Length: 202
Ligand code: MLT
Picture (spheres, rainbow, N blue to C red):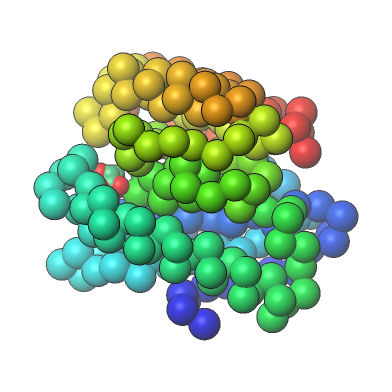
């Protein structure tokens, strides 16, 4: 297996929640979030394969907020291959994955959605950035996305959240955006909004 991870089998009729942590986190970080969003769902929580001074990440960056796009492409393919293999190993439905990412984890989830058709069936992106620019996206008509954004987020300016929403919508995705009067951190209000969106969509 190419990634450290935790898999917990849940109700097979429910989605598999793919949990992707932020910079410096690990596969245990977002277990609480998966439980909150859908306590009956299966959980696949993954640790990023890149170390930045000992902090786990899902891909390299050149500076804060500046992605190493070649590495992001490579790591995105690596994660998609991991999902293909893991679905076979654990016997879950590969078509039934909903990604939930925070910050760096939201960014690799966004990159998966930008790069591969039907690799997830929806996504909750907490404080994401635009993963790539000038890239043709696959058809996203069946891939709804929730974006949790902060009006004072120093990592992702509101204009970037709006650009992400507009680009995803341009490919057909039904995008909901939640604006918190907050910075880059995840608030209870944002999680409540994400849960309501999940219950409506899945
Ligand atoms: C990233 O590199 O993915 C973003 O800057 C967010 C983060 O620091 O995790």
